[in-house]
Image 1 (tube, rainbow, N blue to C red):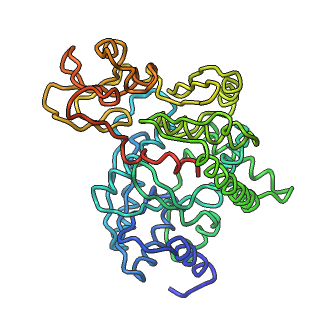
Image 2 (cartoon, rainbow, N blue to C red):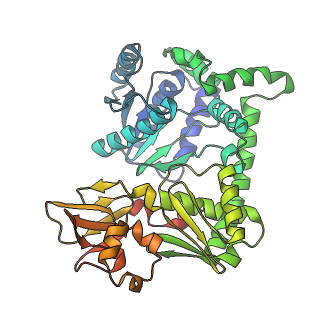
Image 3 (tube, rainbow, N blue to C red):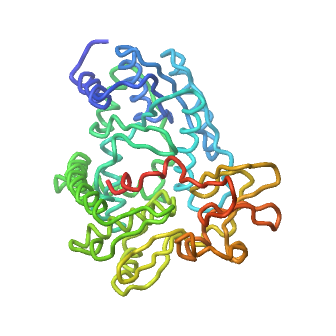
Length: 415
C-alpha cells in the first residue's frame, strides 16, 4: 500500500503512543465501527514493524440483534489480517440501573479479564478527537470542573489492566478516509443516531457550532489545554499531601490546618482523592456534594459521603470507611472490601465488618489506637457467631490485614 500523508500521520500516532517502550503484546478492542476497525489495521501494521503480538476482542453486550453480524464482520477482518479474535459476552446485567454506565463498567471488566487470560500487556481503544469533543460537551452540561473537562488520558489503568488511546488527536473523518483508501468497510451502529443517548445529542450540538468555528478539533484543543492546567494542580496537590497527610491502617488522616490552607482547590482535591481512595469508588463525588464536606470541615463536624465517614476535629481530619456501607458485605474468602487477610484460614470462616457485636467482644479495643467508628467498619474473621480475629484491633493470633495492592498508595490518586 503506498504511503500517503494520511497513512504517515496515522502511523506517527502509533509511534508516539508507544514512544516510551513497546509492549510484548497488544490487544485491540474492536466493535466493528470505523474507529476501532481503523485502529486494528494501524496496530497490525505497527506491530509487524516492531515485533509485537496482536490479538483482538469484541464485547457482545447481548442487547442488539444486529450485534451478531457485526461480530462476524470483525472476525472476517481479523482472519484476513491474521489476528486471533475473541468474543467476550456480557451476561450478568439484571435490567436495573443506568444501562450505559453499567455497560461501560462491564466492558472494562471483561476486557481486563480477557487480557489476563491471554497475556495481553496493553489494550488499545479507538477513542478519537470526536469522542474528546463530545465528552467535553457532555461534561460541560454537568458543570464539570478542570478534571472533568480535561482531555482523556492516552494511557491509564483500570481493573488492574493497562489501556491506551492512540488516536485521541485523530478525527473520525480522517480514519474513515483511511479505511476507504485501503478498501475496508465498517459497521454503522443504529444506536449512534438514537437521540435518547446524551452522546448522540452532543454530536448533534457539535454540528451546530461550526458557524462559530467551533469543531471537534477546537474542543479537543481546549481539553488538552485544561490537561496542562490539571497537571499543575496535581503537582501542587501532591506537594500538599506530603506535608499534611498520613495513612493510619486504611484511614486517611490530615493535619487540618495545613489541609485547609488556601487555595481551596488544593484542599478540595485532596479530600476528594481521599474519599475516592477509601471508598474504592471508580469516580469522584460530585462537586455539589463536596461543598457539603468542605462546610463540615470548617465547622469541625462529622459527615458522610460515598461510603466514607469524614470526621473533622480541631487538629485533624480523618476519612474512614463508613460502617453502613459495608455492614452487609460478607465473604467466604480472605479478600473483603479493600482488604486482604492472612492467617490460619480454613473452611467455615467468613469475613465481615467488625460491627457492634464484634466490638463488644473486644474489651481492650481502645488500645488499638483507632476511633470506634473506624473499627466498626474494619475487617474481621468469624466462625458462625464467634469472633476469630480482628486484625486492625490487634485481636487474633497470627492474623494480619493489608490493603489490596491496587489501593496501597494514596498519593498516586492525588496526581
